[in-house]
Length: 202
View 1 (cartoon, rainbow, N blue to C red):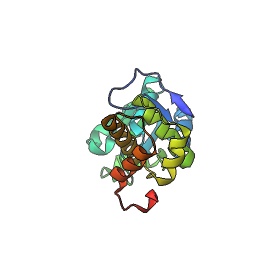
View 2 (tube, helix red, strand yellow; view 1 turned 90 degrees about the vertical axis):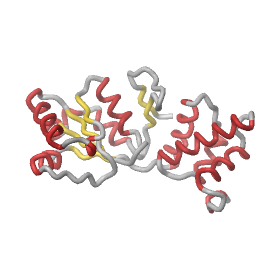
View 3 (cartoon, rainbow, N blue to C red; view 1 turned 90 degrees about the horizontal axis):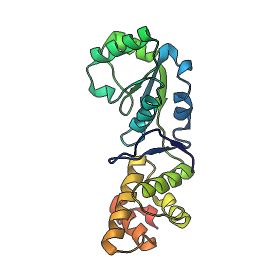
């Protein structure tokens, strides 16, 4: 499994490591080279639960620069001031927003962030989806073998949020049945997440 080990204490409300794969490998590389960012700034966008905040935590606590998370929910003037301060201090600034496009009304901020490095989380491929399922299961203290991911990956959704819901359902069903997760549990979890008539269950 390809992961970045974060210099963080384990989180109670989320994963403590990032699975790196086809959907985010370019982001991991870019965050390790902030000296190459135009105007010391990168904008990271993507859907909820796609690892953006975890990337931000790693970047900030590694000492590489400053982070603004949920920027699409903030006052744009405040973001503009943070951008100016980063330029004055010669500090890298990672700005994290939601699913693109992020519409910015303030012209000065829009022009400056438009010149920044643009990063976007992508959907996992099969290999990354398998790694994500394994990692999410480990975070919950649950073992999923290769036979589990071989069964689940072709039938699972492709967003990290859907994969997370699937692991939560497997864990819950396994606890309810007081049994290790086997194919009957995997199938029931898929039905819980995708519905009983979902063709992918065949």
